[in-house]
Image 1 (cartoon, rainbow, N blue to C red):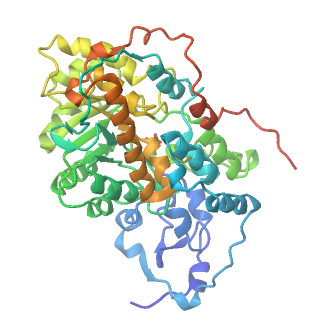
Image 2: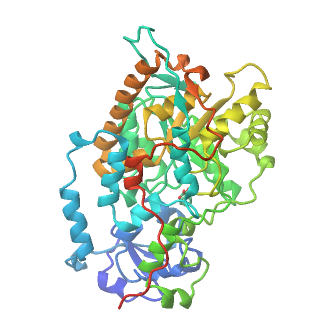
Image 3: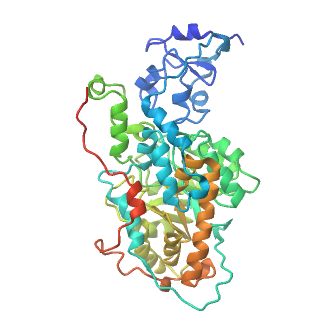
Amino acid sequence: MSLISAQTVAEHASSDSCWIIVHGYVYDVTEFLPEHPGGSRIILKYAGKDATEAYDPIHPPDAITTHLPKHKHLGPVDPKTVVKVEKVLSEEEKKRQELVAARPSIDEIVNLHDFEAVAKAILPPKAWAYYSSASDDEITIRENRAAYQRIWFRPRVLRDVSVVNWSTTILGYKSSLPVYISATALGKLGHPDGELNLTRAAGKHGVIQMIPTLASCSFDEIVDAAVPNQTLFLQLYVNRDREITKRYVQHAEKRGVKALFITVDAPQLGRREKDMRMKFVDEGGVAKVQEGDSGVKKDEGVARAISSFIDPSLSWKDIPWFKSITNMHIVLKGVATPADALMAYDYGLSGIVLSNHGGRQLDTARSGVENLIDIVAALKTRGPWPNPRFAIFVDGGVRRASDVLKAIALGASAVGVGRAFMYSFCAYGQEGVEKAFQIFRDELEMNMRLIGARSIDELTPDLVDASGLHAHVGLTPTDNLYNTTYQPLALAQFRTK
Ligand code: 173
């Protein structure tokens, strides 16, 4: 195939004819412009140029080849014609790179908050804004932490705790921790290897990873990075085009994924104001926003831009269809009430995740661990509990093994951790994730000994006092570590000249 010179590409730099280079290959995206989920403006910024750097964190590598018809794949760019431009680093970027070099040594990381503090300091501001933001006033994201602090331990003593064992099974699959890696989108915003950091660490340590639909790495790259017999789950955003969803689900099953976690708390994405403001500033403020663009509003942040395919019409009526297209376990992620928990049970599903999407969806929704109490009580009306046919998971705000133990004592099968593992790879790559596992192990060992539980089975409700959980007021001591990394929301900024 003949090579295309960079100069020829540069001649196609408008909406009338728009060519871009991604990974050394030239694509004609002119007709795709109005269809791009992130809007046409962002593509036009790279019209006639190499877009790889902007493309990579937000798209799996195969997104462009699968979405663009073959005849728009023009051919490889001639590397000899590409003029290497010396990148001029902004002052902000220079400072950031200095901080990366001055990170604490990983040996100095003693808890999960440390990863978050390092990530906050070294992530590009856009990535930090996207990852850390939650919806509206960010009450729920903070309540997710606070709720665990309204649960107190009632330890048993003199139980010979010389040997404690925290390994368990999750939906029947072995897990070295009572914790799984929950799905978080766009991993490459924070580290060049993105989600593969999680897959590799999880494979090495027998931890289960839930692959996100909106990963930066492609689904197959992630599965290819797994070791033989590594258990993987899949988080699913349901596409308006059910054929696409069907193909995706069946492909996942063929590749050995064991469970499908259908996200049900995001028919529309929450408004994450830190993320929105970041985008707003980056795109040049008011004047440009008013120019308008096809489709996507400019002030809504990266997540909203890429979420337009999600089907808000998804309903209980779709559940039998999911059961008809796959034999994987089906779990609903984002259930919050006894009524919906009972429906999930009665529809014959394998479980539910009590989640508020890390505080990123409905603000002032209660925490998963608070909902656990009423939901376990409701499920007990359906028969003996725990029920081997139906698992309850909890996620949101987990930073300590003590949080995990509290949720399990109250009836959870296992607990999901999203952001904390993501921050661990943003800060230290795969090694960071492995260290996070080690921290969980150390904390689990100590806490299980101190509460007198030698195995996950021995974590029973009598070991905790959750009587204050429903009282949303209290004199809980402040969570100093969390509060130092928590970034308060800010108000609109005046323009500076
Ligand atoms: O929480 C999220 O940011 C999320 O789930 C999402 C949804 C759509 C696109 C990107 C991320």
